[in-house]
Length: 93
Image 1 (cartoon, rainbow, N blue to C red):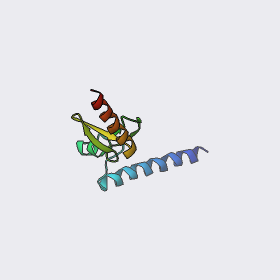
Image 2: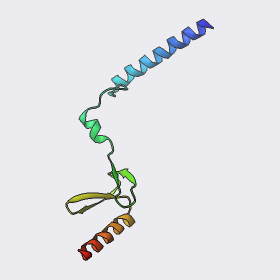
Image 3: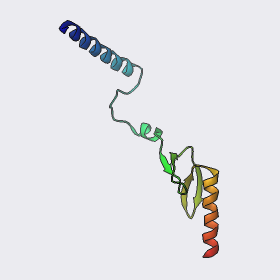
Image 4: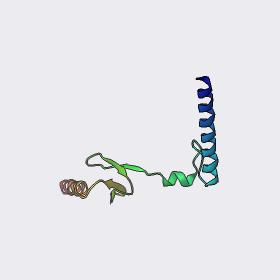
């Protein structure tokens, strides 16, 4: 039983080591490494819909610039609801 455990750990260690070496040779970063600014920019930024509160990736959201502020919406319906409420607020002011 001890022989089996010994060889199991030896083979597992060799496989992990080969994975790291092959990953570096292919140009990839090793697991747990610090990411550079390019990698941080590539990560998706989440934005929140002001009408329904849904979170989504900024690339998928529908933008609207209102009162000098950029807002993001999950759908045309939420965007239209927000625009209608803006018209009501403007009419009552």
